[in-house]
Structure formats: C-alpha cells, structure tokens
Length: 163
Image (tube, rainbow, N blue to C red):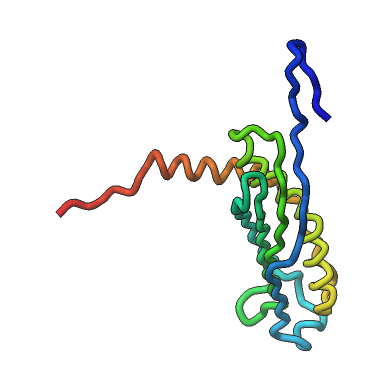
C-alpha cells in the first residue's frame, strides 16, 4: 500500500487502526425518580462537559479516553446525571511524529464519539426520559482551544511573590 514518488522512494500511507473500544467507567443517576418522570413545567437545563485524554502504550499504540459528563436540571431539581469514560486503543502507522498528537487528540475521539453518544442516549431512555442525542463535537476546535490556552499559560507564567 505504499506509493512511489518520482525518485523511487516510497511514501507509506498513514493509518489509524482501532484495536479495541470499551466502556472504562459509566454511571447514570436518576435521583428523584419517580417524581422526576412526570410532566415538567419547562425543559430542563442540560449541561455537558467533554474531555479527552490519551496515554501512549507502545511506540505506535495509544489509549484514548473520551470523558462525557452531563446532567439535566439543577440542584434539588436534577432529573438525571451521567458520567461516561469511553476508551479506544488505536495503532498509528506511518504518521509523522509532529502530527501524532493532533491525530490522537482529534481523530481518535472523533471515531469514538458515535459509540459514546449511543450509550448515553440509551441510558437516558432506559432511565425513563426521551433519549438524549448529543450534538456532534468539533474535536479539532476543542484541540485548538486547548493548545491556545496552554500557549497563553506558557507566555504568562504566574508571578512568584518575593519576600
């Protein structure tokens, strides 16, 4: 699957292989049932947090963790809460070193997201509510935002008070 360029050298095709996917941790809470299952005066405030972490397992293998946390309602009026740690092990082949981090933090969670989304939708439905279908997430924009935050922190280190 290598392509030859004009001087006879080959350029191997970059590959991302999914070796496994799994639920590492999952929690769904319906703390006010059955009272919360009745008609609501208004739609609940839904809050979602997304986080991506990764760890290198071997030279080419990475475990990527997609963490999704959310809730509907606030305070004593919480309808439901969930926390999902959904992971995948990915093998990256023929990807230049400088592109490995973006691929792991953008493309790998993008591949995991539809499966995590379905787990959450089914859990919310099984909790007695209409399924919660999360909107697609732009992992590229999240990555760029995080890299910008890190760059700003590095440019503006916290000042250390002197005595």
